[in-house]
Image (cartoon, rainbow over all chains, first blue to last red; front, side, top):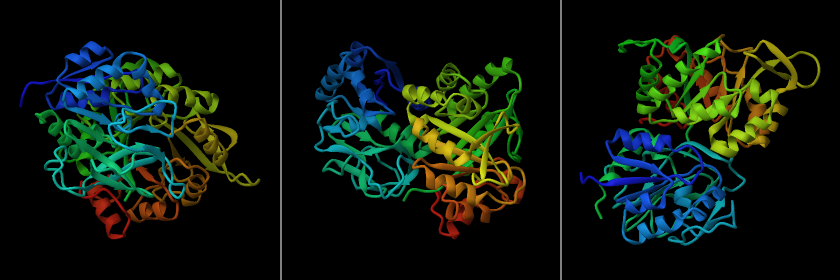
Length: 202
Length: 256
């Protein structure tokens, strides 16, 4: 594996220790940072996130948003987890005043009222062939979710999940990857995806 | 399809698992780190570490357990017991827990739920409710605190609704009537709470056979069921329980 440095972006929301521990376990060179300079210096960028979409506002007033977008533009492998994946879309009804990165078209919406919300627990993936992030992942694997808003299925969707409707579980396009579930909490299946990201050499 | 979760609960006293587990292939059956890992390998969907240490000066022992558990446990795990303040919760999250469970402290001060949720997200806040069936009156089930010793006069269904409104991400609902009896979960209580809130309800208390899990998922509408002594009713491991649930058409994460 190429010795690449991974920056986990800390924009002041939630608990990032689980994500860091998973990368540590895989032997990755990983740092949790709130410094735009450290994000700029990294080879790969991970944008985690739990909680409310408005927490992503922490990116906007710290210079982190520009650092992350610039890294993504330069072709650095980027992985958004949960809110970090939703951020790749245009925005979310959860906090309409905050703009997403707009890399993927569409907005994140609530689940239909026919199902309990939040969607919490292990649900299965329907994997599209050719996914790089899901290399060697069994096509009907279970992953751990906890979220109230979901991103639409788009051309870049490489895996989807059904919960009252079908939504994007994994998106990937060139160097940009996003997962709605928590790979760091999805047992060996999730670790395999993070390993694939560590090994992504684009 | 969203699966029904099987949650293994480990009671931890002064850094050691004190009941509810019986492993054959473990070097040290009392080590919570090893027990949690073994349950995860067996197919547990989540782990709860419940700190039942009576004295607060042992708090750092528990934080050390949480820290060591988190290093190698890549399924969600919740820590409960003795969390009274935002700072207690922050220390547990810092040590690597994914969720905290609060019980008496939330009843005493419901704003604690919202304060923890504001900082760590609702998904990280589990409100544990100990409820007992009461005769007379229409309320049906009363909330008890302080490890089930102190009645509060509050209705369990109303409290669950309030906790959810305050920002709880899940309700962990223990039937004190069934706890330790192996007579089955209280499906009526579970269903009343599950219908009253939109957040998931974890049923607890009374697990004694695979059929009890089937009943609480079907009739109790639980999203998850918790058991501490899953090995004590003749099952080899959680995988075997899941195979039985699967045979009964209950959606579970198996194989995993």
